[in-house]
Image (cartoon, rainbow, N blue to C red; front, side, top):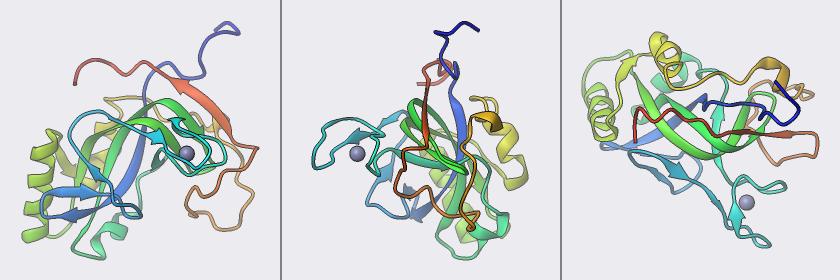
Length: 185
Ligand SMILES: [Zn+2]
């Protein structure tokens, strides 16, 4: 690769949790509903109106590099885990990232049967993505992009290994992935 090659040439995959409201996915910490297809984040910060994620801000779509522990979503009837493809501007953190563009690509079925499972299946149908056993989530996600290579991830200097990618600091780096395959719209 030459000096001008982008750091990443395909979409990358990430993992998240959402709150289920009937068959809809909502962000845990914001009033954002995740709809079918490509979502694009805009920075609407006080001093900025432009593409997200913006340095010094909290905008963009958040995702972990690895699936959340399986039991994390089993704890309540409304949490669901899933995989997303991310591309556009990315800000990489030690355990996760913020991205400009995101698309849900798969949801994890709960361990339990019953109502929650039916709601996850309904949500996946509305998003036109598969609902798969949690152990298969990573494999299914890899059909849509690559994991962010470890060498690109900033070193974790905090003791809390699962802290959310919080307020940015200048040490974090940007990369661009603009090659989402056109298999889906
Ligand atoms: Zn912002």
